[in-house]
Length: 420
Image 1 (cartoon, rainbow, N blue to C red):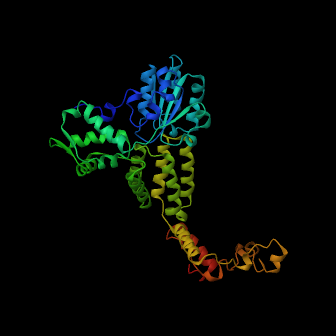
Image 2: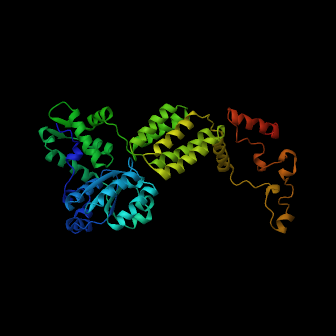
Image 3: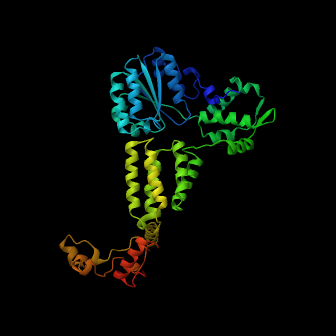
C-alpha cells in the first residue's frame, strides 16, 4: 500500500483538472493565461481549507519550470524568509509559496516587500482569512488576489468518485459507496480532509466488498482520526475544554488543550482573545494582574506570531490556570443587566444629575450631591442607585485573599446597608 496520503496522490498537476475553481482554471481566466504564458505575478490565494490553494501553487511552479520554495507561516520566521531571498538572488524566476501567510506578523511580511517589488521572488501566499485585514497593505498592493470558492456537495462527490476510479491503490478494492453524508460532514468541505478520510475508512473496513455507510464512517473516524476543524464542532469542543481547564485551576490540562489548538493551526489571536475574557470573567478581582498579563499576551502574540507566540501563550495559560479564581465581577454585571431589562430606565436621583444650565439648577439637579473628597477618608454615605433599587447588592466579593480585603473595606464604609 502506498504511504503517500490519498489527497496527495490525487492532487491535480494541471489547472484543467482542478475541481470547483473553474473561474480560475478555465482557458479564458487571467490566472490560466498567466500560467500558460509563464508570466505569473505575485499572488494571494484566498479561500477555505482544502479547496486547492496549495495545489494551484504547485501547478504554477510546475508549469513555469521555476525554482520552488515553500514556507509555512506557522513554523517559519524572518530568518527563513531571508534565506530563501538570498538563494533567489542566484536563480531566475523563483517562486516562494507561503502557506497561511496571514499568520505572519508585520515585520515578517515587511521582510518580503523589497524582494517582491524587485521581482527577486514571485510570491504565492495562501490564506483562509480576508487578506484585506490580515496582509499588510504595502505587500497586498504588490500582489494579485484570487478568491477560491468553497466546495459544495457536487464537487466533493466528484472528488470521491474520481479517487475511486483513478487511484491505483483504491481500484484494487471493491468499494460500494452507499452513503456519503458522514464523509462530507466530518470533512467540512475540505477536499484534502475528505480524501484522506475516505482512505482511512476503506482501510478500516475489513469486509470485501467494502461497503461505506455513515455508521461505519463515524465509528472509524472516532477511533482513528484526530481532527481539528477550526470552524466545526471540535473547534468549540476544544476551546471549551481549554477554558474549563483554566477555570478549574489545572495548568497541565490547560497547556495540553493549548497544544492541541496550536498543532491544529488555530488563530493565535482567537486563543489570546479568549484568555483576556477569561482573566476578567473567571479570575477578576481575585488577582487583577491576570487581566494585565492576558492583555499584554494578546498584544505580544499579535506582534510576533507563530511559532514563538506559543511560548507567550503557554506562560499566560499556566499563570491564569494557577491563579486564585473569582467570578464575582462577572456575576455583578449579569445581575445589573437583568435588573435593567426587568425595570427599564429608572430615573437618575436628582442629586446625581448633571446641572450645566440655570434651569437644571433651579430644578435641584445636583443640589444634594456630596463630593466624596471633601470628607474624611474620601468617603461620605449617600444614595447612588435609583430609589426603586436602594440597598440592592450586585457585587458580592469572592472568598479569596484580595476580595476579602475589598469586602472588609466595603463593610467599613457601608456598614449594614449592602450586607457585606
